[in-house]
Amino acid sequence: MSDAAFYGPSSTLTIDLDAIAQNWLLLKKKLQNGADCAAVVKADSYGLGAEAVSRTLFLQGCRHFFVAQYAEGLKVQAALATVAKSFPHSPVSGAPVVVDAPVIYVLEGPCGAPPTEFIQSGLVPVLNSPADIAVWRAAAEGVGRKLPCLLHIDTGMNRLGLNGTEVAALAADKETWAALDVRYAMSHLACADEAAHPKNAEQLDLFRALSATLGRPLRLSFANSSGIFLGPDYHFDLARPGCAIYGISPLGGSSNPMQGTARFEGRILQSRTIDRAGSLGYGAGYAVTPGQKCVTVSIGYADGYLRSLTGRGKVYIGGQACDVIGRVSMDSIIVATDHLTCQPVAGDWAEIIGPHQTVDDVAAQAGTIGYEIFTGLGIRTPRLYIGGAA
Ligand SMILES: *Cc1c(COP(=O)(O)O)cnc(C)c1O
Image (tube, rainbow, N blue to C red; front, top):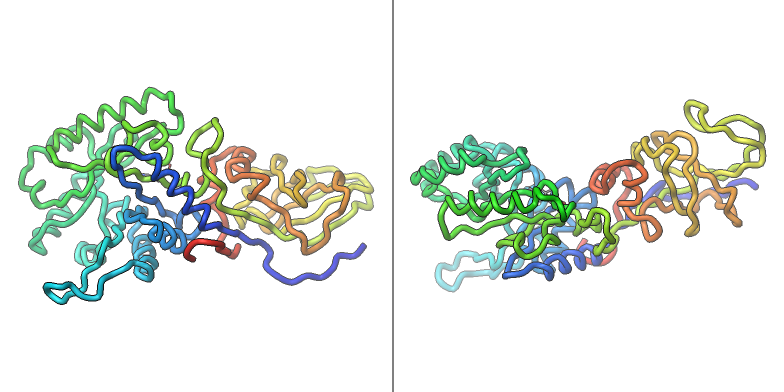
């Protein structure tokens, strides 16, 4: 049978903004003691689209957004400007007053732009080192007012943030402290996805001790997605979930309380029946015999379907699991379909991520984590949004 001609996209990534909103609301509901719930939208919301996600969550009441980099922050800010409500005029001065405006924090710190530009943007940097603090203090002195910032205290990641010695030095430096408008002191958990890991309690104790030396009142931010599930001791004033909003499981091992948010599908380009003994794919490493049936799907490592899925990947066609056979190519994979009663034709779709297979399932096949799968999805796949505020 010859393949029918078809037209349309080679792959699609359909993002359910209602599911994203519901995941965020579930996380928010879990928070105790009045803790606020932020949204981490770095890396284009883990590949799913920071603009649509930020707008959707803003409309659900989210007011704290975290990005990694300055340029990401500007993008989110522009997106939020289209939905942020503002009263036209202040009753007193006549100046516009933004009600309940969103705040966008830049995890990398103030390095993304010259200080005057950074201040102008209104983005809030996370100060990760004494050098960052010096830059922000000088900038504050330059403009003659305290400047908002977050202060990152390292409690065991040894990645970013002040160590204990540096926190003590800052606590003793009243002038520097007075120049900073520290909105939150934050720290980051290294093993929150392993609830029983002793490092969690160690970091918690150290965070309490180090933040206490800076004096009160000081609001605190500690938990990422997994940290929220470690219980109210970890909630403090502001939680910073990322992965769980997007449906990646925050609970390593146990069942996922979050709902899936994305469907990643590839188009079937060809359906074939092998007519002579040989092999398929690069490297000729997969042997085939006459009569074998397979299809070629328009997804490859350029789309984020990792080459390490060679020999291990599965896709779903018509709701049935099919093995990926032969090497993953740049633009395509080959999928065994002998066991299907109805052979697919060109133009049909194969589900890579969706109702039958989660992003965590694909990550497990590839020997990585859902975060890497989502953030690695290629830019040539069009993002289609359903629900929410795209
Ligand atoms: C990425 C990140 C988060 C979000 O982590 P998830 O595990 O995705 O919830 C929170 N805080 C910091 C500092 C981060 O870098």
